[in-house]
Image 1 (cartoon, rainbow, N blue to C red):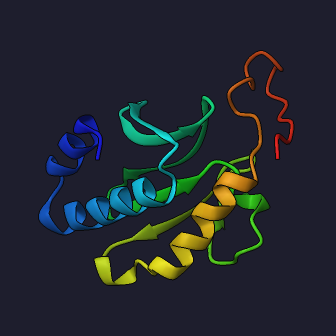
Image 2 (tube, helix red, strand yellow):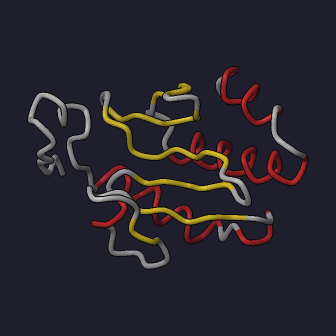
Amino acid sequence: MHPETRAYNRSRRPEEQDICDLLACEIDRLLPEAENKIWHAHPVWFLDGNPVVGYNMLKDSVRLLFWSGQSFATPGLSDQGSFKAAEIRYTMIEQVNTRELRRWLAEARDVQWDYKNIVRRKGRLERLR
């Protein structure tokens, strides 16, 4: 786990920390080629400079966000925002279905919209994969 991600997780309450640690370990294990860093104050993983998955704290939950998640075939994510992002929220570690998480992470590698160049394209997304 990236040291900054570890520090982010350690700054959470114990139940939140457990969820964040599980998510970070699974993401690192299943997307070993991804670059992990703190981006906009939250842990995010990038493939070729494009954000694909990350998590952050909300008032009552940990939100796992997939930037291209609205295009995934695997169900279970809720649309987030006006682009292609989708999310799931967790309040207890028991809610994290690792089998489902593995499917979403595989899709995060294979289904990508180009967020890296969204500003240059004036808010227009193009499909990469």
